[in-house]
Image 1: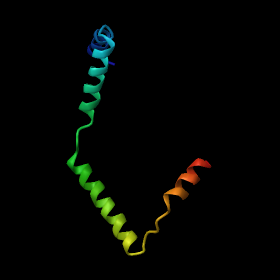
Image 2 (image 1 turned 180 degrees about the vertical axis):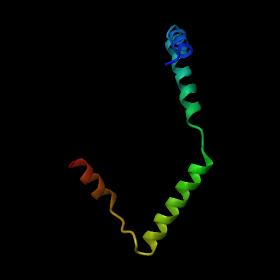
Image 3 (image 1 turned 135 degrees about the horizontal axis):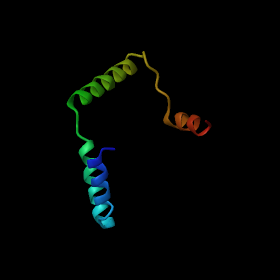
Length: 73
């Protein structure tokens, strides 16, 4: 952590709990920025999987079966 970040942290620790929560929320929100390129890649992947399912190249597994397998790990 840089000295600047350490200084900010020390200042933030003196804030009220409510102010710290609001600060944390703002910081986390700043990291969650949409990325059009990633969205397009996920859309293409979803369309390929759906097409594979419709053409019989991909088999679906019931959610209940998946959850049961996870529970038994």
